[in-house]
Length: 150
Image (spheres, rainbow, N blue to C red):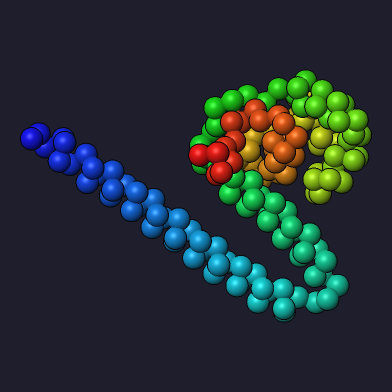
C-alpha cells in the first residue's frame, strides 16, 4: 500500500478538523466582540444609542452577507451595471425604494453602482447590503453560494 493511500484520508480529516476549529474560534471571537458592543451600548448616552443601532444594523447585514459564503478572496464573477439596472427596473423599483429596502445606501451611491462609476465588490463593507439585495433578487454576479446549496 502506498503512502499516499494511507496519508490521503488522514490529511483530509486533519484539514476538516482545522476548518472546524477555525469556525469555532471565529464564532467565539464574534461572541466576545458582541459582548463588548453590548457593554459599550450600555455606557452610551441615550441620544447616541440611535446612531449606534444604525451602525450595528449595517454590521449585522455585513455579517449576514459574509455568512452566506462570500469567500475571503476576490470572487470569480463580474458585476455588470446594466444587468443590475435592468433588475431594478424590472422590479419596478426606484433608487429610493431600493436604498430604503437595503438601509444605509444613498441614492447617489446606487446611481454610481448602476452606471459603473463605482466598483461593486462583496468584499468592500459599503457594498455588502447591495450585493445581498442583488443576490436575493436573482442577480448573483459574484457566485455567492447559500450554505444550504453546498
